Image 1 (cartoon, rainbow, N blue to C red):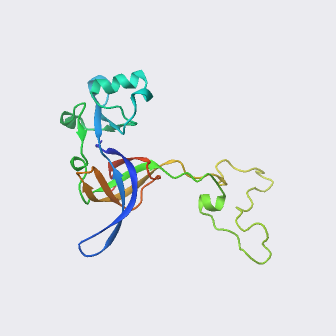
Image 2: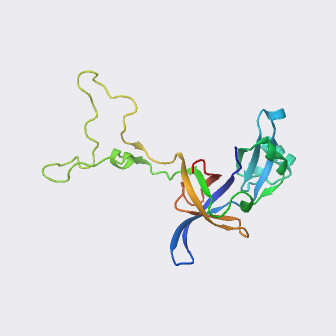
Image 3: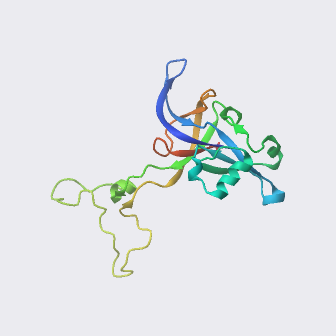
Length: 213
């Protein structure tokens, strides 16, 4: 039940502290998060703030979405995301408002970042599930990186569902928890978050206050 921001991963860099320490950071662009709808318990059954991020051409928006954005008086966006907010805080927002990162986050705050991990295509069991490979010498000819046997004895005589095997690696929604906001660039609407976050450069992410710690 807290407000977050939608952003775009710009890339990684590093910054230096006053005592000369280097801190690896990921730059997240959270500019122009605009409120498109306020949902209340009376009309919708729950309380939330709907936020749009990014830009989209008018020709790429269907009539229903165009009317929704026009009603709020905001530019069409690429991403729509709702944040559940306590009823007492709804009065702080109205349709058309632009939410600044400094009003939601502070330096030193812990955050959770959700994104889509980098897709790596079809991968073997060793890489996909971090298995140990077989020995690479002494007659082990063609099974260095194989998963080994997967079957059972005569009873049950089958492979159980969910067996960890080769398959599609990455390209899934995942969350990195407990990251730290190192710096907030209010002029350029950027968040500098310590460490790595899910996804490729240019990927959309959601930044929320941490649920742990």
